[in-house]
Structures are given as C-alpha cells and as structure tokens.
Amino acid sequence: MASIYIETFGCQMNEADSRYIADRAAASGYEISADPAAASVVVLNTCTVRDNAERRAYGRLSHFKALKKADPSIKLVVCGCLAEQDRDRMQKIVPYVDRVFGTSELARLGDALAEWRPTFEGDDADETSEARALLKPIGGTADCVTDAFTHLRAFVTVQRGCSYYCTFCIVPHVRGRFDHRPLGDILGETRAAIAAGAREVTLVGQTVNAYREPATGADFADLLETVAGLEGLDRLTFLTSHPKDFTAKLARTLGTLPQLEPRLHLPVQSGSNRVLRRMNRKYAIETYLEKIAVFREHCADWALTTDLIVGFPGETEDDFEQTLELCRRVRFAQAFMFVYSPRRGTPAERWEQVPAEVASDRLRRLADVVNAGMRTIHDAKIGTVVRALVQGPSRKDPSKLAAKTTDNVTVIAPRPPGPDLSSARPWLEVRVETAHVWGCHGTIAGDAERYVGAAQAVAPPVLSLI
Image 1 (cartoon, rainbow, N blue to C red):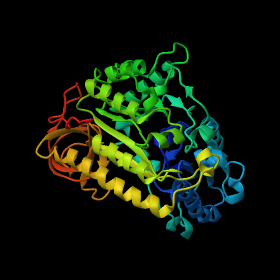
Image 2: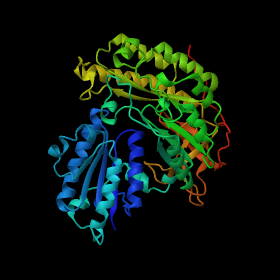
Image 3: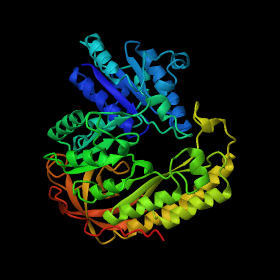
C-alpha cells in the first residue's frame, strides 16, 4: 500500500501545513508512516527562519540520498520556507529531490500525491535494502501523526504571511504578505477537527492577532469569541501574537472565554528601544509594558511567554543589560531565546555582526535570568493538583505520560492502568511533587471533567511590572 512519511522543521505554521499534507495524503489512500524507510513518498517540510534550521534540513536531505539511490521509485519532496527561498537552486544542491513546493503550493502537493497514488499500487512492502534499514526517523510530524494522542490536538491556520518586515525576519519574503482566511473556512475546519476527536484547537498565524475577516473586517477578538462558542471544544489556544496588534479589546476578550488556555505568547525580542527600532518592531518597550499591564488587568493568572534575540547587529552591552532588566521585571513563564542568525535577503544580514563569542555569552547570561524566573513559577505548583491534557508518552520514559497543564507547563507522571487515555481519559488531574526549569513531575490524582471554565487549583503568581 502507498505510504507517506512527513518530517517537519520549524514553527507552528509548518506543523499546520504538515497536518494538511497528511490529511490530503490520507484522503488519497496513503498510510501515514512513522519510518521513512517504509514510505512510498518522503516529505521534508522545511524552515529557514534560522541558519541552524536550514543546515539541518540540507543535512537531513543528504541522509535521504541513500534511500533514493536504493529505490528510485520513491518520491522525495521538499516543501516549506526553505523550499520557497531556494526553489531555484535546491535541485542543483540536492538533484535527487523529485519535487520542490513553495509555501503557497500545498494544494499542488496534495494534487501530486493523488496523481502518484496509482504508481504505488501493488508495491511490495518487503523493504530489504540495507540503505533503507540504516535510515531511521529522527522525529517530526510523522511521529505525532501516527501516535495515539494526535487526534486530541488540531492546528487551524487563520492567516498566512506577514506584512511587518522585521529586519531580521525572512517570513514575509518566503510566505508573502498577510492573507487572512474567511471565517466560514476557519469554522468549517475547526468543526471537522472537533468531530474527529480534537479536544484542543490551536489557531495559528505568523502574526495571528493581526487577523481581519476579509468580508466583514471582524478582528481577532471577534474570531476567538466565535470559535470558542463551537460545541465540543475543550481548549482553545493561539500562536503567535505581535505586540503591535495586542489591544485592550483583545485583553478583555481573553479574560471572558473559559475555553482559552491561560497563556499569552507575546514576543518582545529585546528590552532596548534602540534595538527594537533597528529590528523594525513597531513598538517601544514602554508600550510593551503598558500592554502587559492592560493584559494583567483582565488575565491576572495567565502565564506570559515570549521570544528573545541576543546578538542582534549593533547590540551593545547596555542594550543587552536592558533586556536582562526587562526579564527580571516581567517574570516570563517561558522564553524562547536565540542568538541572532543572519538570513539571506533581509536588511540585518548586511549590517555589522556582533562577535559570535559575545553573543553566545549573552545567551548564557540571559538563560540564567529567564530560567530562575521559570523555576520560581514551577516551584509554586508543588503540592497543588493541576488539570492537564494528555500529550502522549514521555520521550525519555515511555512508561510515563507527558501532559500540558492549562497554562502550558509540561508535567510528567507514571502512566495509570485502565482504558486508552487518548479516547476515554484525555484530561487528568495531576498532583505536582517536584519542579524543574522545564516543568514538573507528579502523580495522577484522577480523571478531570470536560473543561467548563474551572481555574487551576493554584494559579501562577501575579507578575509585577515594578
């Protein structure tokens, strides 16, 4: 039988795109494989937001070369942001790739899968090639598409592209400007996901809170209210917001919808106004703090997470110290921290770069400050019973379960006996016993009811802005 393996690098947009590819493949009669060595079609969904993601993608393609050489009938496909950026040169670099699909060509990829399907009819599934035997999956969408817990979570894209052109960001160049989906399409896809068993839906967009309904002009707060009202939805999340579009109306709306995961991801990138101007972020740090204060008025118990870049071209030690001070002042529940990575075709690529050793040292110092704040938040959960949605087996110990609390903290607990958690017991109450920087360990105290707006047993501490 024809089968497809999908491996994903990058952000939530790529995860959503991979789900779309998997759905199109399944509709065309493909099995979803967790092993590229057993697949008829191998898809690599790529990212180019940082140099490391680009290098990993090309490195992974070099591993697939042996697979393609052993069986030329296998279709090797590359899609995503790197495919868009390198479409004119990719097949010169990796000539064994069959097709390259840009970020706006997923429907064409789906059509190609349907066309290729008859080619694989009657294929012998006895994969004996040494090259196939040596090629193992390294994680990615294929693993989560086939696990027993996948149907509990769904990504629904509400918007593609971005029109803000941050000087460090390649996204507008590879995904284009804002393209907002009609509300009816979003609701239809969300209803289908719920009908298929999803308990948690994540609305995704590159700048999701800039959403505007094409026909009516309804904004993101209106969209959240509409989606939250769908029958059968347990939990609603969204990624990623931009401070420019975080309004008082949105803050009020967040505080009124019990279905929302109590977590806001609001990337600040730097604590220095000088750096923010060079980044073209369209806000000052004072504005960011004012927006957080409004957010706290309506969502005092929510977790606040962010993105931070160190070593941006021209960043001085004083600029960096301002970022450290911001992180001490606003205790982030989590921060994704990166050393600046030059991206081809962006303005910042042409500017004088901060020495690598300086940037690496700043990243270490920033992590120390952020991690101290995260550990304090997690320590506050010890002794409490938290409500969590099962994510699947723990990666380090499959005898244990990984789950996410309502404010998105990972909690690991021994797997209980009983029915399949993915269908009968997706929500659990977990008694937190130990805390770490990355999350918590605990034991399962019992099943939790369908989410009806009950708060966490103990909310995270309110974070002071002074």
